[in-house]
Image (cartoon, rainbow, N blue to C red; front, side, top):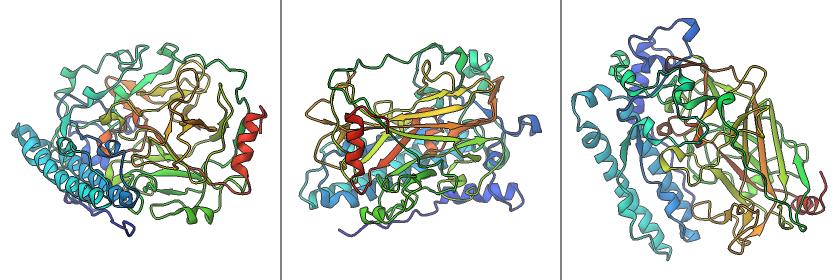
Length: 507
């Protein structure tokens, strides 16, 4: 089948948001902060970058993640199926935008969300499901029989989906006692088309004050590492690829949504391979050049950008995947980006296969739940004691924010990708062993360090909020952090990495 070249349409909801915001600013750029601001908020310089906590009304849309259920899609159908899954993401984005711009109507009519947003969304999803079923069957496969049970989406309050790391992170201490639902029920106003209540954040879709925690108040939670066995592969291999100082960005995701422009709905930083977009192929990767010092490392390393919501905007404030979809604020460039491969504590490793794809973490973990979540947030000086999954840390002065990723390190020995982009790789068990016949491969680890203006939480509001880019309905939750990787090497580098780890060297 031909490659999918669907392009994302500008939705009526997006146009409505753009028009209202432009009018509010006399036709200028789209400043989501102004559009979503409550009428009684002050805009003094001291708190111009503040965000508010979400209340208990319907705050976002939660839909079953169909892509994770499709584990057996024939290869001939995958391009088309991935394109249809991208259409589902677009539908959810447009439904969320409608939810965010109709708060007045929702307040007047208790059935508005169901009748005007969720009901039509279900019908739209059913059409896509029928096309997915047709593509799978046409290619000789068998679509899951329960697909239609996944058409319905629900409206969820922002506070209802939060997970708990323990260590006192869910309490009101980090918010000065100002996060109770009763206090927030009266937040609102009538500016910008009648937005009655927002979900915090400069764009009205997060983060909120509840998404931050003072890391000095969190109990230690880092478990001990597995004990090394006699056959362990104890070496390390570091590749230096920079921090994307040259601004190589796009909002595509060639792994999940090949051939679909803006398939990620959020902006990525790219290091390593320099020709990665929705239309890249394995041949493109080999011609892509690299930002890595080791020119044999053509691998693609990419992750969603982090922004500080201080009232400023960046180059993409009027763009799909950027400001038009609630990803706003100033993009932060990491001050350090360490990319290191480590071995297995129980066995030797085999070389990574060429063009292996791995996604770690879940960009939809806020609505999907934490089964595939793998976010780790901390601060310099605290990394060995505290790692946060569902909160952004407020670091003490002199300490920087740290994002870390540890990728799946077990491979099925056959496939460089899978229908749901997950089942061909797995995490080792608690002892470090690979299960189900999977083979240990070098474990890719990444450590990103950011100099972030210190957020200040006061009375349920946060100044200098920062957040990872994401799908708009995910409300910029910390738990949605994720990272992507495509292995591309030449001149035997993959074997050199494995040999370095197996021989216990630091390379």
